[in-house]
Structure formats: C-alpha cells, structure tokens
Image (cartoon, rainbow over all chains, first blue to last red):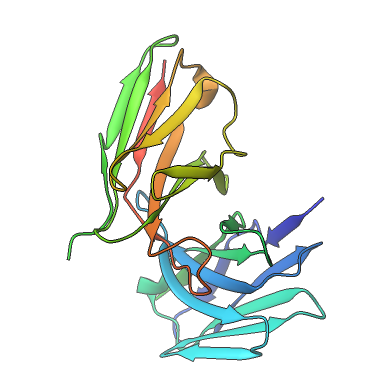
Amino acid sequence: SQKIEQNSEALNIQEGKTATLTCNYTNYSPAYLQWYRQDPGRGPVFLLLIRENEKEKRKERLKVTFDTTLKQSLFHITASQPADSATYLCALRLNSGYSTLTFGKGTMLLVSP
Amino acid sequence: GAGVSQSPSNKVTEKGKDVELRCDPISGHTALYWYRQSLGQGLEFLIYFQGNSAPDKSGLPSDRFSAERTGGSVSTLTIQRTQQEDSAVYLCASSLEAGLSTDTQYFGPGTRLTVL
C-alpha cells in the first residue's frame, strides 16, 4: 500500500541549532512535495514546495531537499527559535490523474530557549 | 485579504443527530477540499470540489457523509446520524485550481465536532 512516513516522536532541540525533519514515502512517484506547518488549534499553513526535478529549495531559514531515488525529503530549519515550535506536515501530489494532496501525520518540533 | 473561514468553530451534538459544517473559501479559488483530523492523527482526505463538481469522493467514510458546493463558492459538509467516532476537527482548504503544479492549499481554522 502507499505510505507517507514522518517521525511520530517529537523532535526536541536547543534554540540556535538546526532542526531536521524527515518525510519518507513508498510506492509513489510524486510530481511534487510540499511542507506545511500546523500550530495547535489551527489549520496547516503552506511553507515550501519542491518539484520532482529539483534537488533543493530554500526560503529564508528553511531548506527542503527531495531525493526521488531514496524516496525521501528532508526539511531543515537553521538557527531555530522557540517560535518555530509546531507540527510540520509533508504532503505529496501523486503524478498524473491526481488532483489532491496526500498528507503525512506530521512531526512535532519543540525548540527550547 | 480574507482567508478560508469555517463555521461553527465548535459543535457539540448528541449521537444520532445530523450536523452541517460550513466552509467559505478564498474568493476566486475554484478548488475546495474537506479533511478531518482526529487527535494525534494526520489529515484524512474526505472530498474535493473543482467548481461545483466533486470528482473525488473516495475519502468519505460512509454514506452518512455528504457534501455540496453551490455557486462555486460556499460548501457544506453534512454528517447524518452522527456517531462518536465522527468526533474530530473538520478542516476545509481551498486552492486556485485543483491539479495545478503549484496547487497550494490554504486552510481554514477548522470545526471541532464532538459527538456525545
């Protein structure tokens, strides 16, 4: 069956360090992958999109990599801050014929001062 | 500009009652999506609309669930004869057009449904 896996355990890091979150998928050949942030009691907010032919994408302190051979995306937050604490979701759009996104369960990030 | 809005924000109902959840997408967005999220779970896709049509209803858990969209704008998700397992946060999202390569979805704040 098709799966998207994100670490279910929360990631705890110290302020100023780089946080790295992982998204693995099986049995997909996604057209692109997106990362969203979700705060408690709120809907997810779009952060970054990376296409299948792109290796890396950056936006301010955020960096996403996409390895279609490993079927993995890594999401990095450099110089992390307590305000970065949230749950981060990856989402895939499958190739042709699919118009919807399939979301992972998300990983909670906790940044301590 | 205004984002996606949902109402009510909270709904408590008794088992067996029907509920209607409403979503107002961003103006100009032709695609609209419904998800539900249970405690500690990921987003579960329910249904999406492109305009007023629902090309994919595959995520609706049972025939107690239905949704409609009129005028290419507001959508309502109806759950008939609610069960306790229907308790969850129901999220609505909209995007410019389903299937676009940059199909970024903008989410509303959700409706928290509690079935007693």
